[in-house]
Amino acid sequence: RKEVEQDPGPFNVPEGATVAFNCTYSNSASQSFFWYRQDCRKEPKLLMSVYSSGNEDGRFTAQLNRASQYISLLIRDSKLSDSATYLCVVNRGGGADGLTFGKGTHLIIQP
Amino acid sequence: NAGVTQTPKFQVLKTGQSMTLQCAQDMNHEYMSWYRQDPGMGLRLIHYSVGAGITDQGEVPNGYNVSRSTTEDFPLRLLSAAPSQTSVYFCASSGGYMGGPTGELFFGEGSRLTVL
Image (tube, rainbow over all chains, first blue to last red; front, side):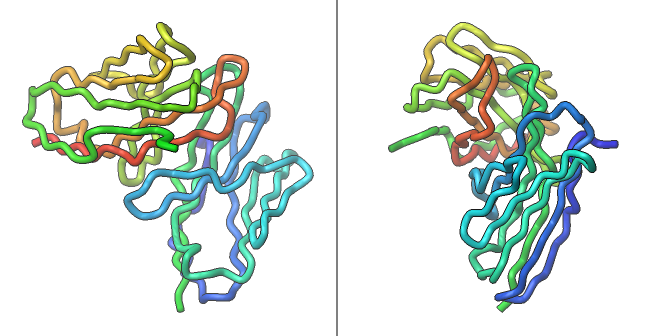
């Protein structure tokens, strides 16, 4: 099993819809989790951290399921500007090279 | 705020040439790192540093050197460029925690390198 896995998509979603995607991780000792957003030909930027109790930031909700070792990202009322690649990042701890990036899920919001 | 600044943004090299990608941050971050991003491969860690004078290898260090003489600067040197090093390179920094990065990495805008 790969360390961090994501469905690459693309997910084609109509504007206004709700979309969700997951990310699975293999190291049960992983300590912290994040979603990054990367626009085409741009650098990744932190979208949100993922807390054990789940957390929400506007239209975005992130959840962590430690038992099944996955995190999820839910986007409600999707906008055209949400079109991007969403990267799952897991910090397994244990040192300075502990961050592992998923390959990303490509989301396309269609008008 | 400048954040993380990378130069150059674009570069074309011939096989065997050497060059340095520059990276500077003005956030007083201890942790800095270099990644390469290739289609279908995601971001892969090349080298990283937890502070001035300290560097270490990441997942794909071969063909690259780094140094960290100051907190602000973390240049990446390609010793003898090869076509396999054609990629997009990102420098990133983080406030750091217990010798490693916190989750929030601040990335530069990237350097697109083509090796012919």
